[in-house]
Image (cartoon, rainbow, N blue to C red):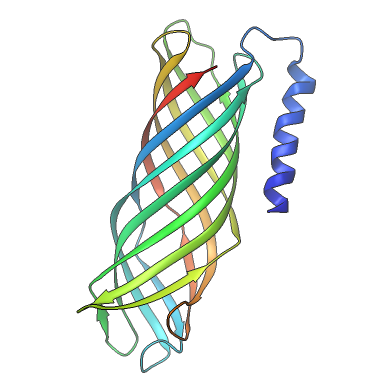
Length: 217
């Protein structure tokens, strides 16, 4: 959490010092988003899960994400945002002993801080790029089959994200946007919530295609 707080302080103070003279575009904005989420399949290690320690295959299907961002624009080009995001993808897990959990989900609750650069444009369409730091409050995977459920979770993991998108300005207050985003958190360890054992070596690297609304105060 201290890493996120430090990054937020830097992202807020640096543009202020550099662009304090430009106040025409300064102001707060609110941005809710919805996204399609995709995660790659993984091979992980298990300890105390099932009847045999070893490797497990995790197959992940498409899912969704939703979130809310609050940001401040320093001028026409530079902005910083803090935000929250919930993400969930369907999962299928096969353990080292052959047990197969055909139902389940792989989910996270995350907070982040980003810096954003918007390119100059002569039309209402405006491309932008950005990067930032993630703090994952929780990563959770549920292994479900025939009414049985095993839950494993991890907390306080951190990573980064990069993104690019385009913003269409409807009027001076409202915009719509489309964005592609890649996040990366590596080598997470999830321990049992309602059971024993742990899942190790999990990577959490979602790719998102998202749409959103932006309201400028």
